[in-house]
Length: 227
Image (cartoon, rainbow, N blue to C red; front, side):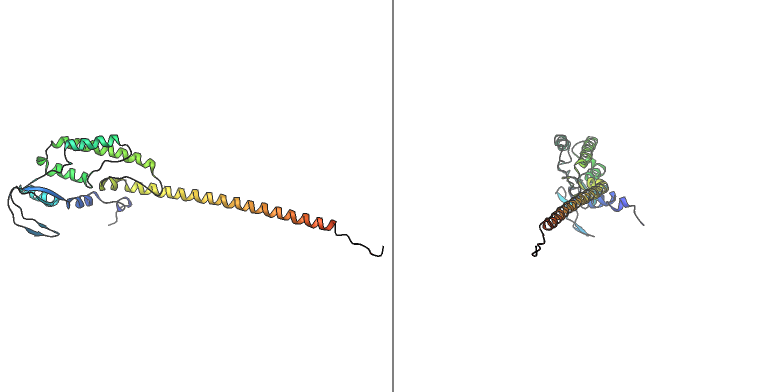
């Protein structure tokens, strides 16, 4: 199966979600379980109401079985997200620092753990949407500062980088070609200018030589000793 070029240049959304699901989250078990070896990881020993860190994918499975409750991360709250939104508005030339997978985490937490969140899920969803939109606006504005060798978008998440990557690569390639064309044109003009200077110097030398020969001829007088 052959993917379109635009998909070969980026991650699929499902691939990014897969990476995010391997990140650890803190949970509170509602039941006790012994440690269990799994493919790629081990399920740690679970004890009721004793905090433990497990991968998100495993937390989702245990949550569906009603065996754990999520401990929401500090950044997934209305106050924190509003603060970040204000920072985005205040700082026009940079992005506020957010987790690498903040978009994926937000979606998974709102779907699978909304009853564990401190604030109402609809309020969190609304401010996340506002935050995402203001960051997208700043990303578009940032392309105005793009050049052929550098693109600075600090504090973007993986999903945000993945979304702009095809366009950014295409624009930078075009700028690189344009810059190369300008440099070639400039070099060609310099070469033409150097050639003109060389021709002028040759003409001056030629004039001096001709003048010198004429000068010598005027004073090259044969003297007849018999007169």
